[in-house]
Length: 343
Image (cartoon, rainbow, N blue to C red; front, side, top):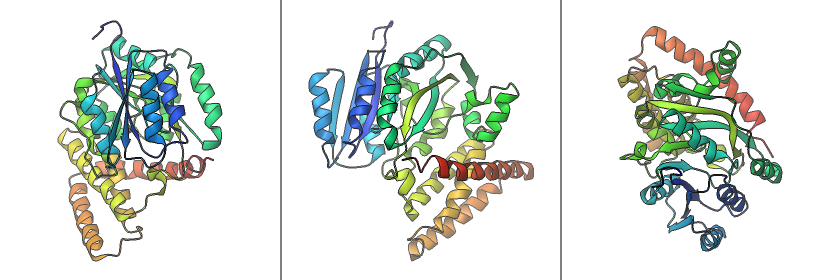
């Protein structure tokens, strides 16, 4: 490894993204930080995405392509992690766009603070904004005003997730927004060793949530860069927006239970996992296939498991979790109307 310019590996699962893939790859190859390994994992795509990946690999030695049979995003992410050579690891979705200074600023934040993970802000955009967003990202964000460092990221993940309360915290001088992050793996830069022994559970919709608790528990410090460095496409066809099966909701229940238990074991209030678990159990009833005997039985088991876990909270803890849940549900309604309907 070149200590002055360490290798950064970017793992990108690719599936039927021919309309957006070039924008994504171009935004990575045009980074101001150039010592990159871009790992494109073709997860059995049925459009021209595999050919696009091979085309880039033929023209830029920094690009590695893996072709595999379709197995889902977790299998693709794991395949990328298994072959990554970088001292630092990043992820991107195949229809999103990185700011030209994404890796430069995130790596500087890691190296200058000794953090285990760095993160930045992101911005949603619709398909009609694709060209404008690509041009904006290519300009490169201005240098950050502030790099904030905080400890105990598991606690921050579990308790700092309400947008309204983050705004209040910033307004009162607590720099709360800097402590916010979710379980998404993009717009982050990780020390490679954080992923030793951690892989995404294959065949699950909530693969990123499943590893969140263990991953954040391994971190001592996180650095936040106060600049938008990642652009997240809002597509009506994405799994997050369209999937409504019982299995989808049940996977989120399992992930909620996993992180709820982990937080309790670490002495952390599982407020975010309370929101995930209670909401997903409730949503299981709305699934079109909720009425099958197997799913009815699973729903009853999930409700009982949820009741057992909530019983481990004190009255005060339950009240706090419930209050945060109500605030977040209101925010989600606003978000769904404004962001998920972007065109």
